[in-house]
Image 1 (cartoon, rainbow over the protein chains, first blue to last red):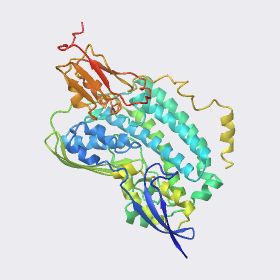
Image 2: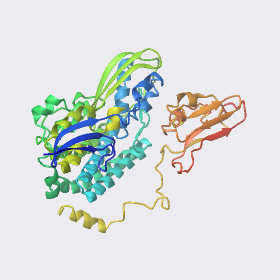
Image 3: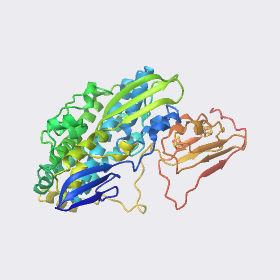
Image 4: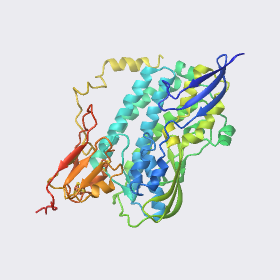
Length: 358
Length: 119
Ligand code: SF4
Ligand code: SF4
C-alpha cells in the first residue's frame, strides 16, 4: 500500500494552538506520527533574568492564558517557600477558589472544543455559554476575565465581600444545573459515544510507563492528583481525585466533565470554611535558595523549579507543563487510528502548546 | 443527537445568550480592571509606576513633567494603581474601545507637583 505523509496543523480547524503532526498514512490508517513543536516559543523563562522576582508573577501568568491563575499561584508558592513567608489562611482559601474557577473554565472550554472536534457544534455552543458565566464570576470577583492577576507573593490582591460570596453561590448553583442538563448528551448520547468510546485507549500500565499527567492519566485508572499534596487550602477540603478506568477518549472526557462538578463542590466547601484574616503579608528582602513547587493544573501536574541568588532577579526558572508529559500519549495512540479520528484523539489529551513551549 | 433535542427546544423559549455588541453593552462589574487613567494634576512624576510595571509600558520624565503610557502593551494588571503614592492612577471599569491605529498616551503636568495632603 502506498504511503502518504499528511501534515496536520500547525493551523487546523480543530486546533486552538499550533501543534504540527506529520502523519504517515496507509490507506486511511495512521502508521506513524511525528510531532514538531516550537511555533510559539517566547523564551519566557529567560525573562526571569531581566524582570525582578515580583514582576515575574505577572509574567508567568502569561505562560498560558487558560491556566494562568495556577501558574502564578505555583510561582508565588515557590518564592514563599524560599523566603519562608507564611501566607494568611484566608489568602490560601481565596487562591483555592480562584484556581478551581480557573479549572472550571478550562475544562468547559475543552469540553466545548472536544464536541467541536467531532462536529457537534450545538453542544460546543451550549458549553461555551456556560463558560461565560464562570468568566463573569472571575471578572466580578478578581477584576479580569481570564488572566485574573490576583496572586502576589505573600497572599492575594483581592478579597471577597460577604454579598459577593452569596452571589457566587447562587451563580454556581445555576452553572451546576446547566452542566448537569448537558451531562446526558455528553456522556450517554449515541453519536458522541460512537466517536469517542474505545478510541485511543491507553492502559493503566502504559499510562504509568509514559509518565502521563492529569486527566489523561486519571482516565486510565491511575489515582494521581497534585491537589492530594494539600497545597493552598486543599488540605482543609474533602477531596477525592476523579478516576475513570476506560483509558479511551470517552473516559478522558468523562474525567473532565466530573471534575467540573467537583470544582463546584470544592468552591462551595472553600466558601463555607473560609476564615476571616488578612489576605496579604508584607514581603521584605530578596529570595535566596532553590525550590521545587508542584500544583495541579487543569491539564495535570505543573512543576516549577526556582533558583534565586539573593539579587532582585532570579538565577533560573524552569517550568515543566503537563502537556509536555502528555504528548507521548498522543504519539502512542495515533498509530493504528483512522485519519478521521485524529482530531478527537489530539484534543483528548487537551494539548496546551503555548504552555509547553513557554 | 436526540439527547440534545430537549436542550435545543428549551433554547427556543429563552432570551438569546448573545448581545449585539457594540450597540448593546452590558453594564460593567464593579472593580473591574479596565482602562488606565492618570489624574495628571495629582501625579508627582516619581516613576514608581514605570519601575514596577511588569510590561514596562509607562515612561515618566520628571524634568519635563510628562507621563506616557502605551495601552497596547499594558496587561491591565493594576500593579501601578496599587503602588502609586500620589493615588493619581485609577482604572475605569470599562475597557478601552478598539482603535484602528496603535497610539500611546502622553500627559503633561506641571513640574514640581507635590502629593496633596488630604484634609
Ligand atoms: S502616576 Fe503615580 S507612581 Fe506614576 S509617576 Fe505619577 S505619582 Fe508616581
Ligand atoms: S496596569 Fe499593569 S501593565 Fe498596565 S500600566 Fe499598570 S502596571 Fe503596567
